[in-house]
Length: 274
View 1 (cartoon, one colour):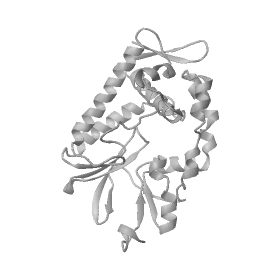
View 2 (cartoon, rainbow, N blue to C red; view 1 turned 90 degrees about the horizontal axis):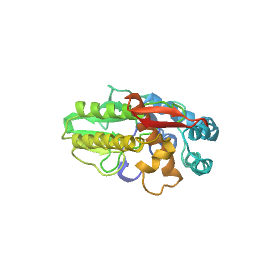
View 3 (cartoon, rainbow, N blue to C red; view 1 turned 90 degrees about the vertical axis):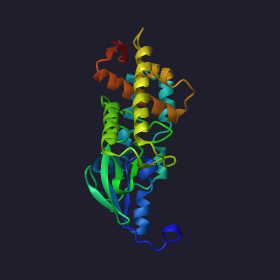
View 4 (cartoon, one colour; view 1 turned 180 degrees about the vertical axis):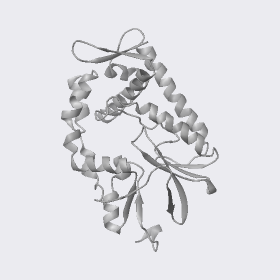
């Protein structure tokens, strides 16, 4: 191997979660350099599912899901046009892997890191914490400048993904020191972990407030709520993310008793503020 890793003995690729910008070249790296794959079990298994049976999570599943939540046929066609195109730019995962889970300790470059996991953005995203050096590898769970996408998908249409994410943020604040250097999955390293966690929690509280205000006078579908929370033009990729994020807030508020579900004669779910 050449470059900064020349002469180093590599053993494993550690992957935080199944999203293609994180796991996408894991198969190539493992095959090319003879490495093991290390990641949480749900993240590995979901990667295998998408790799081996993408059609099972394609148009036939998403079209009625979008229709149920009020997205027009035209808008659905646009969103579905992106399909699983990203899979053509990934290399899948090896046939075997090493599992990591919450509470484990793994050694990286001679340093011991505690494994923490959290859901909401992914299924069981792995983060690494080394308190001795005040290092926290946060993956996509805590990012400095953007709010990680928290979405609901047709595989688990009633999932309270936002509740899971907020619980994870509170657990991070309770278990990780406030003065760590945060190494996120996107963007630059930063300090101020606890402040950023508070900002993310407040961001979602404000989103729920905006959603409650939108549904105060009349019931709205998820598709009708999207413009209230994302008041800018959205392309197909962004529309899919926005739709899933709005539904995550809807499901969370339903569970808290803040919204009431009303299904119209056409089978479209709409929500009214209680």
